[in-house]
Amino acid sequence: MTRARASVLMSLFALGCSSDASESPTETADEGSPPRVGPVIATNPGGAPQPPRIDAPNTPPSNETPVSSAPTGEELPTPELQQPAPPVEPPPTQTPPVVEPEPAAAGSVQPTIPAVAGECPTFQTGTITFMGLRGIQLVVGAKASAATAPLVFYWHGTGSSSGEFTFMAGAVRSGVEAEGGILVSFQGTTGGDALSGTSVFGRGDLELVDQLAACAVRDHNVDPRRIFTTGCSAGGLFATNLAVLRSEYIAAAAPNSGGLTFPQQFQSDYTPALMTVHGAPGRDVVIVDFSNTSATADRTFSGRGGFVVNCNHGGGHCGGSGLAGDIWEFFEAHPYGVEPAPSPWTGGLPTGFDSACELF
Image 1: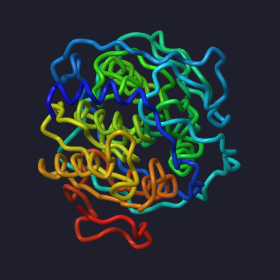
Image 2: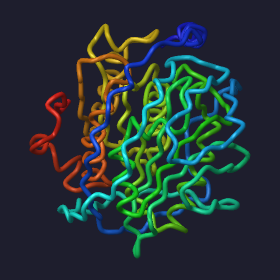
Image 3: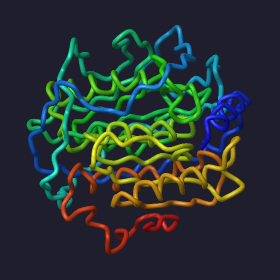
């Protein structure tokens, strides 16, 4: 995409939009504990060259709220893609029954986890300020006895809040808690270039992601092969970019109305698994058609030999919350360096997987 088009996107995204994100999630999850493979520790993790900064940070809420609260829907100062969905009362938190699925096999490709470079947060459920950024919500399960737990980074849509995952990714949250893992959801941004054509999250946030991942692996028995990302709208765009820019340790991404608006440089030769969730062409549209941005991501990842699942639910923008259980199953089956590569699902999706999804 040309530099001029990126500038147009930046100005247009300030228009905002309405969202179909009020669908109820399906609170189902499969648990699994892939065998631990020790991480490679990098003192200077790689990344794409840093372009000039475009600082347009959102202002985080002045009062931090507990994780169990539904999103407040309060206005952030830089709306681009998505207006907040009406507050949705999250379903009661339930601990899924303990099930022992067949674990994904460890492969020869290992993630490179950044080195801890400073203080780490206390990993407990709540809202924290970390590295100067307020409003970061954590959902933390009981610490596992070995390095088997998952870590998920969730990214909200424009005008929404860090609590969005409670109704957009309920099954992911439940799976993370049940396996002693950590879900992290940012409220604001430290800035940096737009990455996806929005200023909701930016390149500056990658440093916080690196540190949180390093701390979680060291301090909370997170399996370095089980670090994932998902999100909606602007957050879905950022989740896709995070998988590209942190391909040294992000195992899989599942953007909901996300994808890629323009090319990015992958951090490494490894290609994370990708599950794009979007609406019908012409319906999932806010400035850009998210069926198209999802297709761009599909082609980019599969063109590098990555495993890709495309899910067209046929609805409108961010209408894929009902696939949260399928996203969690996808994460469970695709740790970093999964064997057989690139996926145990190359012969077809598992029984019971949503019919809106197909192999790309």
